[in-house]
Image (tube, rainbow, N blue to C red; front, side, top):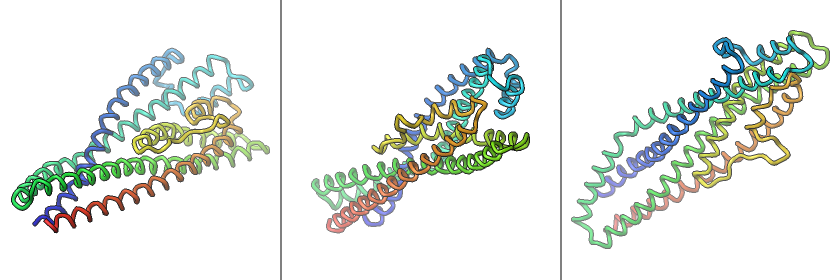
Length: 310
């Protein structure tokens, strides 16, 4: 009888641990969203100062914006024009962050809805088990069972934290690979442009920039989310040496200069470095998960052996 209940309890326990981790994450995301939306409001006010017709400004793509400014003054952007472009970049990046947080909140809320029933299931199973132990076990038996179960619970929660880190890491890696492909294409058009390209190659290059900029903004925000997850599992986050621009600063300034060819090459090199870093961290996370799974299985076997001898 205990064996059957133990199997059901272990299944429910996994889902309850997942629910606990997701609830903590959801609370943190709600606080992040409030801060991000306040920042977005401030940036929108700044946009109004830089450009009164903010609605039209939001409709402009980054390449069109740069192309328009380039048409007005090809050699050098005026101070006000640079501030105008920078305000647009900062607004777009913050908007991307707000959208990402909202998407994560929606995703976690949906996952929590699926897990809501397991706490009640777990509580009922535990009640049945305690009743059986009270009939067949003594005080030392009860204490031993409680100790082993708490130990298993601790490792299960830790494994669920690792699972969440892997989830965000995979999302980041997907975005990095998309951006890498787009940058490789922009780099090819940039090379063609340098060696006698025409207006078509110029526009094609900037079209790729439009696409990649959206992904770079999302990557910048995903790096912050990934680092936060890694902190929860005691793994060092993604960082860059003083000789390499941090991605946060890099993304803010990458396309503010009209001479974008060097920035495209630097972007491509840095995205390749980032890809390797994320891949290595994911390998470590997956190894840690396997180790935790082995520990949990060992503890469960110990538990089963103990229960059989009651």
